[in-house]
Image 1 (cartoon, helix red, strand yellow):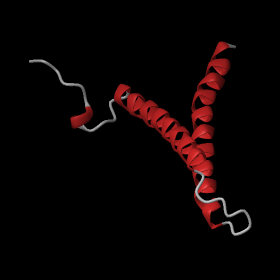
Image 2: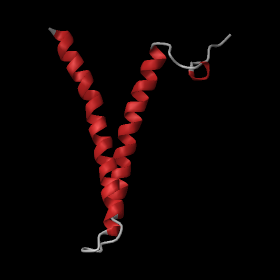
Image 3: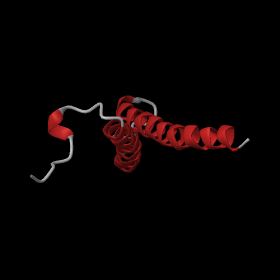
Image 4: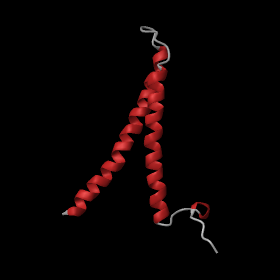
Length: 87
């Protein structure tokens, strides 16, 4: 009974950074296109843009790092990414 629970936790560990990266991307998009709004004419929302950038980079870095270390464990990497062995 433990195996399905651990798989659920593993899925959540990937879904949460994915949602974070998605929200960051959408926040950056909204901040960029707010400058074209003729009704409010608020200009670029720099705070929302940088918050979105940080959230996007954190999410993408986590998923990329997880994939890299999983591939390193399964020996799927190119030789230049494999750990160096002392002779």
